[in-house]
Length: 114
Length: 114
Image 1 (cartoon, rainbow over the protein chains, first blue to last red):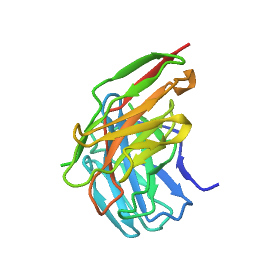
Image 2 (image 1 turned 135 degrees about the vertical axis):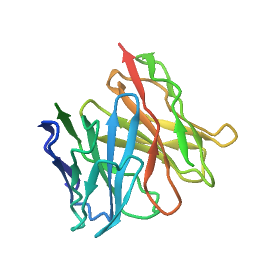
Image 3 (image 1 turned 180 degrees about the vertical axis):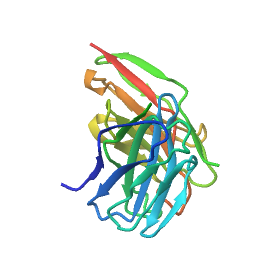
Image 4 (image 1 turned 120 degrees about the horizontal axis):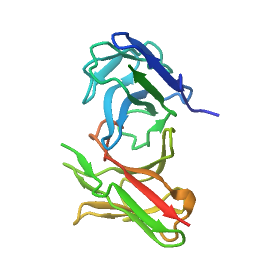
């Protein structure tokens, strides 16, 4: 079955360490997205990419970085510059620009930084 | 800028009763609206969308939503609630005409009591 795989499901890191969250899709979608979810705040967009080798900042990009070297992969690095990294991170994909298609989501990675 | 508001943090309903989860939006141009559901520690699942046409949109699991342009609302409804409908529900609006990027509301927790 086609879908989005996020790994790992749970991730624990010490403060000051960078950590990379994996997101892979086999839906042949052009666009991919990273959202952060915090209780009571809904989902906030971190970065998105509409095509390979190109990506744009979302609303809360500070302290994060991404790459899009392959169509199926969009890893997110949470750097030590991110002041409050503990959150639930969701990756999503869609066919592309303006097709009115819903986003398809992975099952998320819960990151805890202590 | 596009935005959505979900005025209720939680909605409680008895099993078998009708349910409504409220959403209002603010957009420039035509609204493209979506509802998603999230179960604990999982990603979001698409329920339904409004792009154009009939104001009553039918979706998955017996859910429907009513688009009201004059009230800028897109409320989610179900005629008869199930305990298994208990989850977190998000309303979303597409950010702009040339992208599938979504802006999400803060979510409403639906609790259905037996």
